[in-house]
Length: 99
Figure 1 (cartoon, one colour):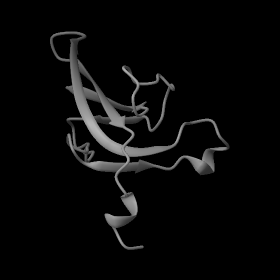
Figure 2: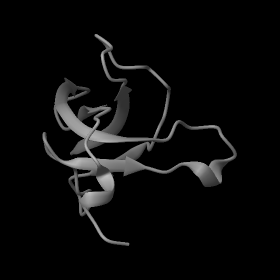
Figure 3: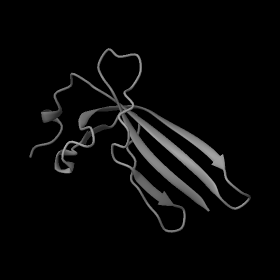
Figure 4: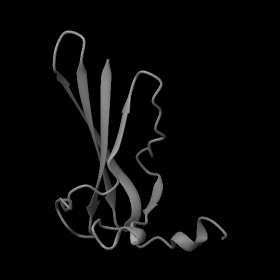
């Protein structure tokens, strides 16, 4: 069985490295019936954590990279850690969708 842990990091405009803000979204799924739609490189996303009392970061931008790390726990169990870096952009996100 493979367990997937997906996390997001914010890359401010002009910064060489993303912030490590801790858990931003914290998605966990497995290959036994689990499913999570992941944004691809170049996709725009918005993460709104306003309802959690300020415990998690909120940001918008374009996916810059996705990094997959596979760790074998045993012969039958593998963990896949997926890190998605979201780069701040000056693109007008209001032009992407009409709300």
